[in-house]
Length: 268
Image 1 (cartoon, helix red, strand yellow):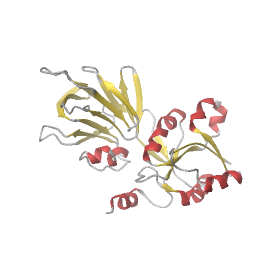
Image 2 (cartoon, one colour):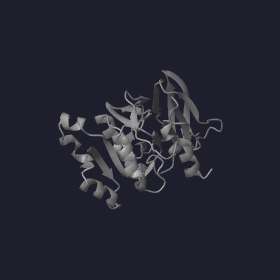
Image 3 (cartoon, rainbow, N blue to C red):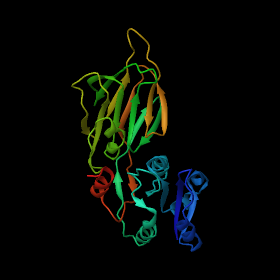
Image 4 (tube, helix red, strand yellow):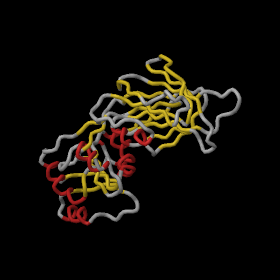
């Protein structure tokens, strides 16, 4: 029997195919919020985290996957669904392939973000953004302890290759294959006309500092991590970005590869 931690989008109903698989004792499901109550021995028996929903639900599962070192199987029951590659009608075949060890996991790089003695992991991005009043912010960017530039505008996105098709793409950044070993730095509406997105090796460390304004005060400036965690950052307090110690394992679609998904999602 395959055992899963699972999480689902709140507004969707529980799929009948999963009810049938449970009744047939082919799978066992434990809600992801109960993971902390499981013993180390019980956790060893967990096959993966099953995500039912869209990419937002998938991103909610990432910290759990990182903490418990579990792969994620994303089932697309949302709208766009770039990360949730498997459709519900394909799930029985996917589970059978998983049971018979016929699926090769994909590994995705993660960002580790450190701020004021707190650390977070991100699959897509960490985005530093101005607040609701719309005043520009000034961000000093250091790469490998070298001050590279000050970015002034609406903010800055530090993205993984997986996240290149998310906020990064909306802000004018490039699409990057998820196996690439890079991070993408994408300014958000920069006031510098020559300040364009750029790509760096993912073993480089970055430091970003919100600069104090000379003539006025900064409004609230936000750090949004994978669209899930929102922090208010302070002036002159360094934000550090680096490659996380572990990768995220994803159970891919058995029907289509990355380029087929790109073609389908973007109507190429």
